[in-house]
Length: 185
Image (cartoon, rainbow, N blue to C red; front, side, top):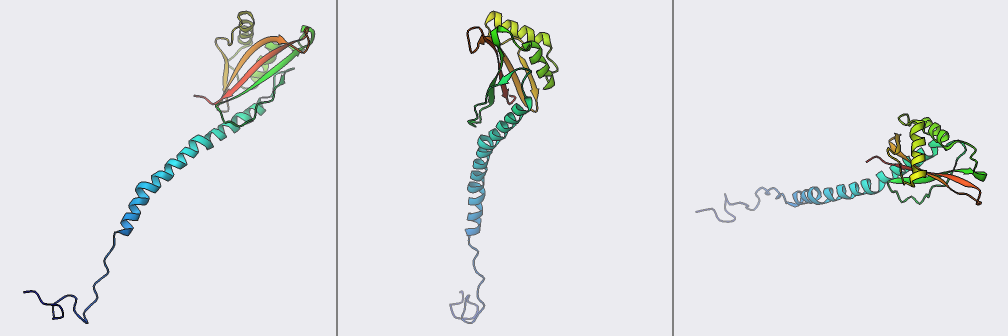
C-alpha cells in the first residue's frame, strides 16, 4: 500500500523538497506560431512589395537614365516623356525633325544611323535604316522587318520611323521617329 499524505515516503510531504516547476507548452506554441504563420506572412508581404513596387521603380529609373544618356539624332528635337511614374514596362517618346517647306536640315537616315551607332547599335547599318524608312513611307507600315532594335545598359531600345507628317504649315513637313525603351523579356 502506498504511503499516505503526510507520512514519510509520501510526496510531497510537509517540510520536504519543493518539486521543480512544470515546463509549460507556451514557448513551443509561440515558436510554432511565429515559424509557421508570421514568418511566411512577412516573406509574402515583403516579396510582394519587392516584385510589385521596388523592382518596377528601379527599372523605370534605369529607363529614364538611359533616355537622358541617349540624347537626340542631329537636327532632331525630342518630345517630353510622360513622367506619370506608372512604372509600366516601357518608356515612350517621339523625336521630330522639322523640315520647313519640305527641306530637312539633315538627312534623316544618316542622322538616325549615326545616333544609333553612337548609342551602341553596331549591328544595324545605314542601309537598314534607309530600308526601314522607305518601307514605312511607301507601304504605310507600322514597323519594318527586321525592326530597328538594340540593347544598351540592360534595356531594349526600339525605333519606329513614322515618316513625314504635316508640319506647322501646309508646306512644312515633319519627320517623326517613335522611340521606345523597355526592359528585356
